[in-house]
Length: 424
Image (cartoon, rainbow, N blue to C red):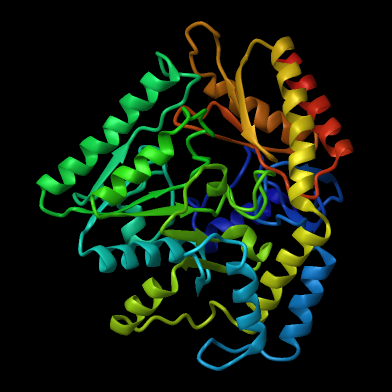
């Protein structure tokens, strides 16, 4: 069957507005490690997907899923040692007082639940997000989304603040931090004046959708202090930055000297299996639970727990955090070498195995090269390497491979990108 016929069938039953990557969509039929294989047998180096964080179809994860599915799969309103053991293993990776887990199936559910808990705990309604964010597709989250089209009007109980990037902002790092911290203070004051107060600030501490900006030192700590002084909670979304992605830490927020009040998890938590959750203090979980009966039919099932435990075990046994750090350092050096050869690369930013390569038409004016970024992404796909793009101007290449990415994969990626850039 041709891809065009399959695309037509998809449109018939899923609608033609359902998003697909690339100008020529891919029909994928198999995955293994860092490789994806299409219906014609062509292999693609996956330099984009963080969902299969320990590699596509990792044998240990697949075996854990199959074994538990063949034994028992039920919801969390029964006792099950495997579910409790996984919750213990996961929460042990966080600093105090983040010692309790609430299961969900998706990051959207996790962020929805986190905001609900914050509003319950504080008695306030206001929420602060970044001005280019996406945290999920529920009604509440759609009303605070700024990075994707949404028919819901931006919530009157929310404020969106810009995030500083030293590549773009004028002044010293201290001056930049002062200006952008002041933006958060203004947002808090507006919410207080509106009579809704501040319940939470919801952010990804890596600010992935914003293009992994270069933050001035101390910015996040100062913002967290303002939020808490206003009676709000800091919620950090680890869907993109968590599970060893940054190399130096298991969790993205651990790159900063702060401990969030609530952490939300998703995508890589189950390596493709629908598993997500909220981590916070036992006191907060129990206080919320006494007034709100929360359970999730599929979240936290024995199969989900088996998969989640296998993911954690593989990260440890194969030292994937260390691999992200080592291979990320090599990739960072090679991307900077490419920047010396290709003036369209304005800036290279990233941590571990997560990079943002900002493309500009002129390094002085920093005019965004959005059309060029699209051409590059599609040319890479034609050559068998998968990446994507992000940022408000769609001009930032997004590079985020599975954590089993090795040196030879990095060399293939760099060589292919070099060829594509040379042909622009």
